Image (tube, rainbow, N blue to C red; front, side, top):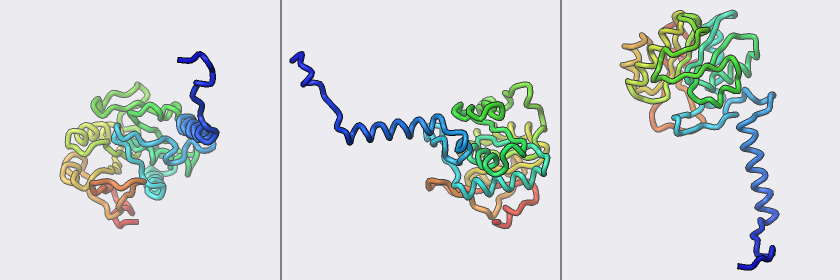
Length: 213
């Protein structure tokens, strides 16, 4: 091999510019600006964690439903539903009380409102998370399995004062009714990507979602 610098591979100006753009986008996703930190999708989906974000319209609709159900001074828990948490903060800023229970530690960017959550340890919470301290719990179990739903149900029943908004597959209708006493709504949630399984919402209280609105 030659010791000459002429043999050193060099990137073209076009390739270098493309790489710089790529790294800038990655930095934006990992360290979003303060103005856009609550935008739905600002943190990219990780399919290995079974993450599929709601469409913006669905996230905003579920956020509005949560605020209506919780009341003006109510507390809202988003369990494995970060899109709804982001929409709540985007819509209402710091005027509402909401916590995000999530396995993905990237969401720790939301500070004290982030609670690390592993559905395999459904009642493993810090001391400041007390039983029945949320007016409504919105939950989206990460996997379509009865085991995952059963364990997530333990979490939901521990956190809620009564109201439950569950988002999961249509195939989970029977076990969801048995475990949580919820019923399927006419409203059909949408995702940013098409899912192979039909997805639905379930509630245990009177809701406009039952009418599809």
